Length: 507
Image 1 (tube, rainbow, N blue to C red):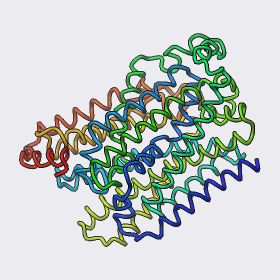
Image 2 (cartoon, rainbow, N blue to C red):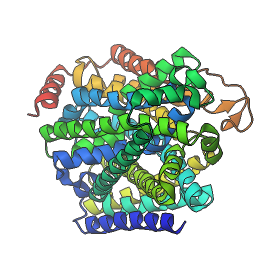
Image 3 (cartoon, rainbow, N blue to C red):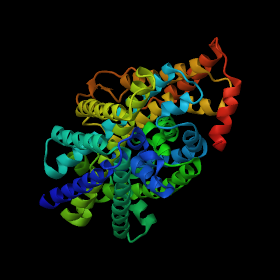
Image 4 (cartoon, helix red, strand yellow):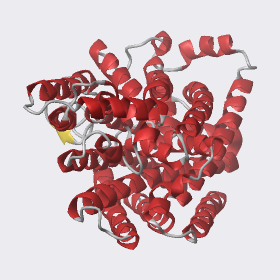
């Protein structure tokens, strides 16, 4: 216990020192929102990887694979493939057209307050959904390691993430994410090597043993253990592959570099790191299934979120367990900090300065509003995380991906590539995607279950699929198309040509 607590303290101390030095930089809005675009390609690549490799990746995916076998690996595949969509369709246009937020990027074609306000609401809602997953993972982790009550753990992480954002802004957040990415890749690599050593580095032998080592027997290596409905599998993968390109906290990372070339370089670097990491999650999940066992994993946490730390304990003892848990804690801190900063920046820049103050707010006022917004977002996220304590964090993140793909991606792509897209289509598309995704989540088995304690509410689910992506994503695109075609005001052809050149060439 003392070693674990010491490592937690060290992690927190390192991140607070980073935040302190970052806070000494001039507190302009540009510094707070994007670190004045001063990060290099490799630096931002590490920061993107740190932002993306979340508690869902390290804790949730390992647990999903350990308990559900092949079905759990869908998360690894989807999260990795998603970056190809970001690289080829979104990264450069986002950097060329935007400044601080996703609302800036869309407003580069449509200078309309309703669009900017809707984009800001989307940003906050998606970030909160994503943050719930991180806080659930944090609560489970600290409860297991230090014995603190779940609510105390969530409160501690919530307070820390608020301090990082309010004090240090984007520069502190970026360096926390860089340090976290290095720690996570290193810790996961060591744990993967130890697992493979137990199988004499024979992957074929590992698969053979796992066919009989779990309660699922041979079915462990086949699909259908968790997702009984084929449409649910398709819906999940659709949300994972398309969702990253609509995640606000990932998109704003492209504003922390000086130009589109550097943005592209950072995405390539991040993709290599993320690819290596998600391949290793397979071995973490298999190792947990073989050496920890499903009963022990479920006993520690009903959602399976403690599979990776428990694997470290079984294979390396208490010290290794404490180290891996501390790395997971750093993972959670870095991701929630990025999410809070994205939400706070959007609220301050889009709603307060651009709409309410009509661009007249001073630098000091914008930073102050962003800090208070960070507090508000943190409080809401903590309250919701307390109600979702029994859910798997990878599953929770998949819901955030579905909302991002439904509400943001259609508008981003149409803004860049469709000449007939207009303001009505943008608003209708964003609202249709956002509302349909949230409503379907609220009616799904994710929230309702006939079995007491299995979900947030007891009762029959109105919508049969756990992930709404297969319905809400097409609705988001359809809303944007129908809104554009039925609008009285036609698209500005000259503005589209300008956006097409700026977005793809940077001129």
